[in-house]
Image 1 (cartoon, rainbow, N blue to C red):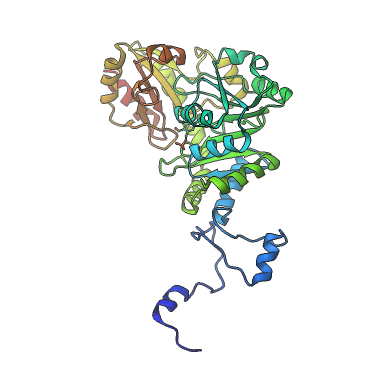
Image 2: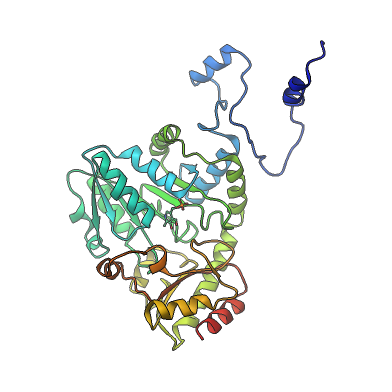
Length: 389
Ligand SMILES: Cc1ncc(COP(=O)(O)O)c(C=O)c1O
């Protein structure tokens, strides 16, 4: 064969070699596109007669494997992964909402979701109705003729208040309204949205699912019929997950059950330590009998998660003094990773809220939110003890 030029060689040499390896792990298919033999194969692909990959914005083998793991985790027929939790939420919402539809939304949701629905969806002619946790006590009364979708979160940030998920899901189903639960704080190990009757489970996989604070990702799980629609919208909006991130997420998922068991156990011990400490005015943990939604949490959660919020006297000054003294627990926002992280809600998720809005959210300036990681329990409790001064 004629000697080819160096550039051609460097681009093509080895690429067509048949793979003769049997890796234990699914390789990272870091390719944007996939080869076809001839025009007939392209045509058969387009006609759905051959099962092949075409283009990574549509589907990618590494990403598909990660989606299969998410479907297993949520006990769902199908799942999709996204470039972030917000990409998952926006794609889902734009799949099902049309101008004139009403979105019923819990007032107690993640700030990014709040801005997405309040600032963006409303511009597209979608009406958004926010309801408080108390109003969700009678969900049927909130569902009108134009309500198309209901978006809830439980437990919520930072008070870890819980909604009765099965009650809301039942009312939605009876009214023909699609229900969605952002399950990020609980994780599917502790709470199974689909088993509770919710149509679609959404998660920021940036948190517990990946678990190492090094991947930004989101997921949506549910029936094959619903997910096919979301899949089509994901192709148009383009918020797909990169194969490298999918590989890392798949690795994180393999240890999720053991990580969650440890998060649950250590957070429970930390919450109990804080509750008996006189320097702490209030502790918020769904596993404590003192939590306002402990009874609901017990019915719908099999573990209470790794998030603990507590309050000290002295408002923001008092909380800041404690915040600044941590040595093991690290000062950063986000949650669900191996590292314990602490944040001040009024300086992060609830920054710039009016006093009235803070009161409605049940958030005070003296609150600290801790994401309990996988460090040794004794070291975390000692760190909290010394930080409390
Ligand atoms: C409850 C909840 N939902 C959604 C998101 C958005 O996820 P991401 O940051 O992965 O886009 C977050 C992020 O903090 C969150 O806490």
